[in-house]
Length: 470
Ligand code: 6PG
Image (tube, rainbow, N blue to C red; front, side):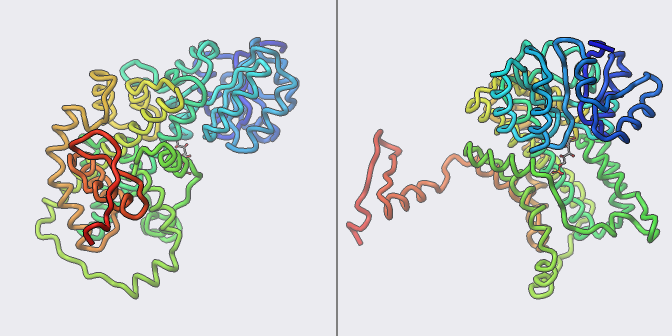
C-alpha cells in the first residue's frame, strides 16, 4: 500500500468523487480520504470497475501516496480548507503539493500559498467549473501557483479535462492565486449570463405573453444559432420539466428569490477595488439580492402599478430580443476579461486571455460558441485593449445594437426591470462616448473642494475661483 497512488483526493462529496472516478477512467492510480464512512462506501460502489478505494485514516492515506505527494482538496471553501491543511501539514514532506480545487477566495489562496511555501509545500489554487457532470466527464480547470510544481499534475489534469477540437480545457493560469481569481471572474460572468437569461424569460413571458412551451421553443431555436451555450441549453430544458406534486410546470412553483454563495459578490468587490467597472456583472449580483425583498416587492407592486403597453410586431420583437441577449452575452464576457486584464497588471498574474478564453470553450458553465470568436480575437491580437476593440466583434455589435435599443426601450416603457440589459447598453454607450460629461464632475469637485482640474488646451493642474463672477 505504501507510496502506491499518484494522487489523493480529500473530500469525497459529489465533486471530489466524480473527479476521482474521471481520473480512474483515464488510467490513473488514485485514492481518496473522507472522515465520513458513507462517502468512502459510495466511492467504492461507484468505482467498482476500477477497484477504487478510499481511506478513513489520514495517516494511512498520506502513506499510500507516491512522493512527492499530489493531494487535491475538494472541501467547502472557507475555514474548513484551513483546518484540513493544518491537519495535513505535519504528515507531509518537503516538495509535496496541495491543490485546493474549491471556490476559495483568492486572498485566502495567496495567504495559504505563502504560509505553506515557508514549509516547503507547494500550494495550488485551482478553479474547477462544470458542476457534477463536468467533474465526472470533463471539467474546465484553472490552476495557478508554482509552474514547476504544476508540471507534476499536468498530465492528470489534461487527461481528465474537457476537450475542444482536441485541446484540453486546462492551462497553467499564472503564479500566486491567479487560478482562483480567474475562476471567481468566471463565476461573475456566470451570474451575469444567468441574469440576462432571466430578463429574457421575463420579456418573453410578460411582453410577448409566451407560455412555457413557447419559451422552450424560442430558446431551442436560438440555441441552434450564435447563442448556443451551456446556460441557454439548461435554461431551455427547465421549461419542459413538470412538477410531480402539482402536475404543472416546475418553474411556476419555484420562489422568485435567488440565493448565492458569494463568488459573484467577490468579483464585484474586486472590480471596485481595482476601479475597473463591470456594471452588468454588478447588476446581476444586485438582482439576486433585490429578489430577496419579496414582501416589499409585493406591497409596492400594488401601491405603484404600471400599465402594460402592447408590442406592435411580436415577431420583430422576438428577433430583437435574440440580438439583445447576444449583445449582453458579449458584454458579460467583455467586462470579465477587462477585469482580468487589470488584475493581471495589478497582481502580476501574467494572465493570457487567449488561453483563458480557450479553456472556457468547453467543460465550464459559461461555455458557449461565442467563446470561439473571443478566443480568435485574442489569438489575433493578444494585447487587445477590450473585446469591443476587435473588428469582427465590432461588426457584430453594429448589427445587434439597434434591436437591443428597442428591447431596452420596450422593457422600460412596460415597467419591466432589466438591470443587466440596460446596464450593458449604457456601458457600451459610455465606452463609445468620446466626450463624456465628466468635465462637469471635475468642475464641481474644484468648485466645492478645490480638488483642481486639468485643461484640454494646456498641460498642468488648475484651480479656478468659481465664485468670482457670481
Ligand atoms: C461552476 C459553478 C460552480 C457553482 C457556483 C454557484 O463553475 O461549476 O460556478 O462553482 O455552481 O458556485 O454559485 P452560486 O451558488 O453563488 O450561484
